Figure 1 (cartoon, one colour):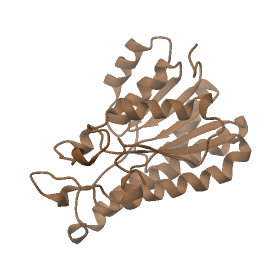
Figure 2 (figure 1 turned 60 degrees about the vertical axis):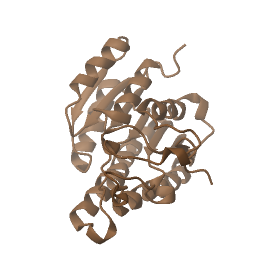
Figure 3 (figure 1 turned 180 degrees about the horizontal axis):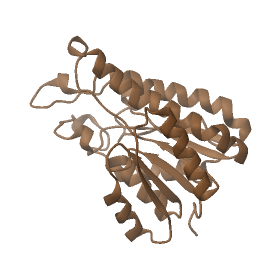
Figure 4 (figure 1 turned 90 degrees about the vertical axis):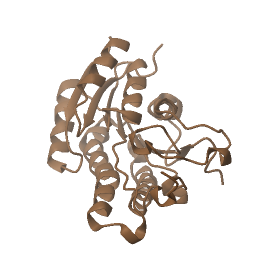
Length: 255
């Protein structure tokens, strides 16, 4: 029996990478999925429909910094399905610039996309929809950068190419926000958890060289590795878990 049959999940950054893998994994467990991205996600929609033909898939091009667009999205999804079960806040940007050369524009881009977008999506999903349902799952994709600072990596031998301070600050903020929200909405039947990926093969890490010999599981992660954790947090198996940060990082952030 599929764990998420007839549920509805909204996934941001769903056109590719972790978001796309998460949407597909949720759909395979029976969840209807709403793909949200600033990029077109029609190709991913067709892939999901081929592999999970029994679910419904919506594809929305939207900027998650637009609070009014987010409110319209939630209203439209609820009108279509009469429920919103899961939000996967995955959309993100990563400026690989050191502190000396970081500009205000790059700082604000990472903070706005990674942290503000998570706040806006979470708020709009909970109030009023999840609150009225008395159930819901918020899943925030953070990063081990938000726990330990940007992990060392190199591109053409330059260590300064690791994820920058704006990215680390925004992902650390996502973790703190996750815990705050968990305490606020637990009495409403809503859980809020975070997944902190380590090095994962996506567009953000393309061209980067991580010191995997220092990692316990000596390989790059895949989007599917993270998608497995998303399904866990979306499923009934995690109903008694909230405010947690699950590191899916090959052991690179043990401690």
